[in-house]
Image 1 (spheres, rainbow, N blue to C red):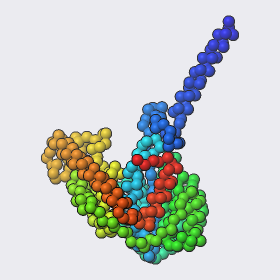
Image 2: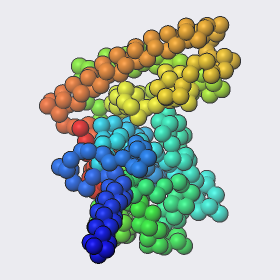
Image 3: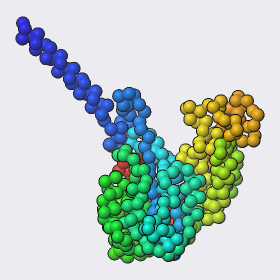
Image 4: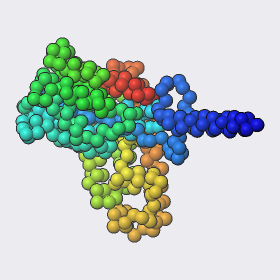
Length: 396
């Protein structure tokens, strides 16, 4: 009898142990799904937390020595293509990735020799207007181009994070041997691999010359892509029946922003200036920027009340009335809320129109003309899509 009771207790303990083990395994599973066709059910953590935010982190390392003006111009245009590429991306756990871009210049005599002729132009940021502004500020001058050192510097200075599901990429572009400098590029790429950062190399010149000067080897060591481009190729604009309307809608879109705080006035001015910069480069760049501004990735909650109001903890009553723009001075909280809602509704309508017309524009180009993609754009987008697929990113 005693043995039977002991056996029953043992069985209960085994059942309880299996239950605990099953629960532990369920909560310990990664949020990332491993196959595209698996169930899209998202497992929650023990505390029923939502999936963690996932990031796409891209560091652009641009050679700004002599003769690299064409590369910089292509990078200015490429910014909006990257944004538009990730607008419709989803991670394996069905969350939308947040895009952050950092920018370095190297190989310029105007930079400090003690720093290896390297400068961090901007750290990881999602402020697209600021990134564009910094790209347009770059100038070229001859210098020493230390590829290994600029990769090493960007790995050490930037906050790459430790989430294994984040997509972390470096794109380094230049036209001198990859071996220059005291710091061996193989040590730098080894460090990148430890941080789960993919190094992609873009040689500005002949494909075989890039291979001979170790640009391809620099990419292969981290599973990245090697590309060679004609950096002086001009950006080609293909006119469509939708261009003029999109440009006008973009101008109307700017009037839906309600600048507030100490940064408000300067930021809304910068927004308009980057529209001008994009258009001065090429009309197609302005159109791509307009499309980006109609997307979820163009968010200015730090200075715009409409974007700020999307936050769950936003309250009009908590805003310092001294931070409000002139059109809201002396208004009650209810009046301010109504004004924000009106601008929000107007913005959504305009953004939807821009998205629809941009889709028609792209369909028109695909049907009637050759694609207007530049050399750098083709190279980067192909690498991004391929490497994002390894992290189970999908596009709608």
